[in-house]
Image 1 (cartoon, helix red, strand yellow):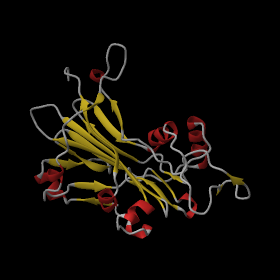
Image 2 (cartoon, rainbow, N blue to C red):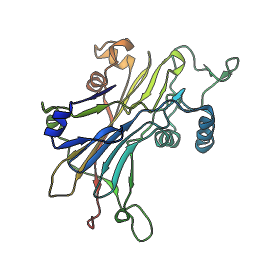
Image 3 (cartoon, rainbow, N blue to C red):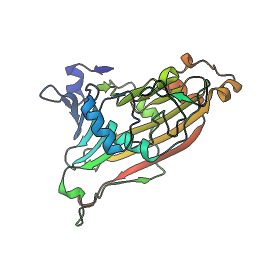
Length: 271
């Protein structure tokens, strides 16, 4: 899904569109760019399997699709990509969700064999973004990244996000998707996972920066994990059919919180 304001609104906000046909804009010292590309080729998929040491990957991986938020003067770059997300999935081995039909699964690459899954086939990931530094100021004398996320008490001002100021740029970047062999859907736009008839799981990451011309950027990240079974939702009087849960905003209001934290990106004083 792509949408952007007209050029007059962009200029009125002190922003400008990115050059050379790139999707995004520059505003208040930030460059925001989204890239939507096609699925990985079979050759690239094989390379990813080797790097991740697994033959179990989502049906559709958009390996070259990215969302990049770059603070130009400091070189701070926050970005979202499929490979890092799958590294998070691989390193957080959640137990496999049992589908209603059986505890066994006909795995798509071996349709004539019954295999009991021993991995998280929903591809749930704790991934909440990657950060890199493109200037030497973000690296210490030993070459280590000096930027890090620290837990904080500050909260994202949700009311400010719902203000009626014009939306200058919006895009939805899908990183990977899997239909879970007709048992639901796993979709990483970093939004929602659903296993029909069994489980609803939402892992949500929001990154916010309040613009200020005379101070360093304050970058807050809100990370949440919400989850419930369809049975538990039905016991509270909520619908138990999967068609009622296509909107992540509706889902977030009905699922109990498993984990929630806010973090602030610490920027070195020398910048």
